[in-house]
Figure 1 (tube, rainbow, N blue to C red):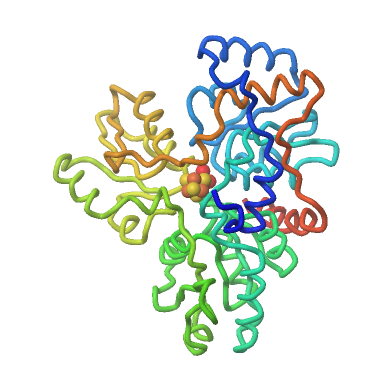
Figure 2: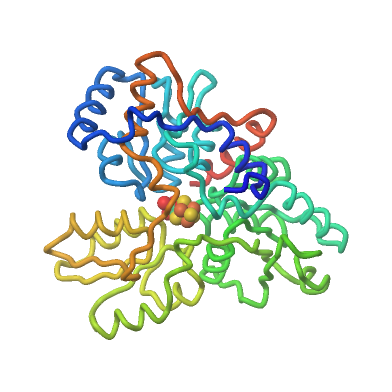
Length: 376
Ligand code: 13P
Ligand code: SF4
């Protein structure tokens, strides 16, 4: 990896990363299991472990709370007793937990290399440039809305400029909040969540424009920017954009009674062609609550799909929409070995791979997150 090509956000994260020691690398599964359980028991109430639905089975089985980004953020904000939150997820989730937790609490991300390629697509200097360039053509009073999949610096900007955070669960509620406060909304970094949600709310596609952070004035004409109600940042999830309409057609040909459910980070065409779309929690609830005999193709990360398939068989058939399976290569970095290493570190009085959001970013990011939690 060429460190020069990284954004400040990625560079800071990786420079603070403590690598897994050799002694923790090749441990048998059975030993990992026994030692994690023992460390967990020894730490008792001092620690809570949070796990996102995309985590591997060997990790998520140790979580005290599992959920989508919203549920995990809510849980982190309510933790008062535990002195340490071990976040089995990705960096933006650990940062949000740090912002939402109390001053005496600390948050650990077992591997600080567990980032999110989408969050890395919006750097704070690009957002500041976007803001100034929009103002230069008379587009002011914009309400910035950031998907939780973004750095704390982006969240801080939104907090400071009258904006808010959203997740895939509450994006429509948050966009309605934003439009009640301003004619134009800037939504970042995921163009697909923004487009899919706004379209579902009745906003026509011709009232949305796509801002390219690498082009002057986002690659837009001043007039189209002035007329837009929604400015979408040109960012995406490299996992979810792999699903295609062709895969949906192939699934429907093979399973005429089957249904397709997609995460809203999928492209507009895929979400339109699917039967249902929603957050990871929504996907789990919908598929689990479907009638016996149902057949589902799920367009989201492979660990969640495989877990659902196993848990719901044989009453329901669940498969991934992409036969090659879409893996989030950063979520998977949190291994049971990392979990063991950070837990045993706490027993030895050592805090490994802590995530700390510095001031004043912390205060402003909290403003944006609190606005969301008040709505959720
Ligand atoms: P959820 O909030 O739906 O769990 O999504 C998080 C995520 O990163 C999806 O890619
Ligand atoms: Fe980021 Fe996509 Fe992975 Fe979610 S699935 S954490 S959006 S890269």
